[in-house]
Image 1: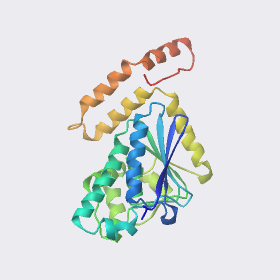
Image 2: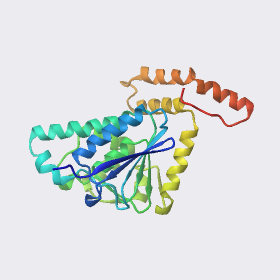
Image 3: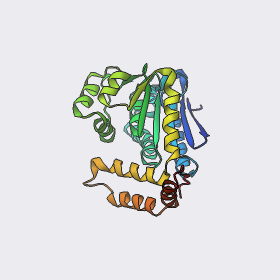
Image 4: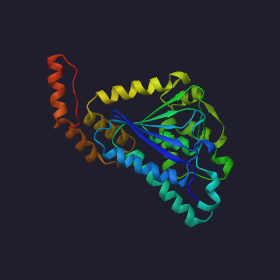
Length: 262
């Protein structure tokens, strides 16, 4: 029996798109979708033409409404099955978190459970003002692993993280903005334009500098035990690049720089 749902991958110029398509279940993530997400992120990481990656949900009802619970009896009924499910979903989350290119979650409709986790794994989050957010684990009797809760707490702080988890209630995009769960909320009709504005600015900048910034910022919360050598290496790669020389020349010549990522 084929896995429900799919990941749609397309590239538009310098932007790689990942669309979660399981609309019958409000884009809930099946095992097959987790596996396809890993493949998509690894492919974009290796593609020098891609400067940024946007993740979104198919249709206008949901970004991702969580894991596909219809699979749980088969996929998460035993400790061994739970471990295997965790390995597959964890590989996708790692591929998303470790790509050195900026990632943007473009959120419409429901962003629940694992959908919040996927959004938090992105660097930037912009939502339609009609979007809804929730982590309903307390209603399902399951507990999230440390890494998932750390991502939530890093984004919104301990007090809001506890409120979100303890109450399991739904939050509006305006409330999510206040909690810093998202970067921006815009009218639904302006969502794609807002993302296009961000991706255009990112794609116009020096890729190695953007990557070095991402590595450094990601290392800040755990700098005491973080990989500071990787931060230094990324910064040095930017300083040694052709793009750095191009940026200096363009500034002196009062023209727009043309960056190549080398």
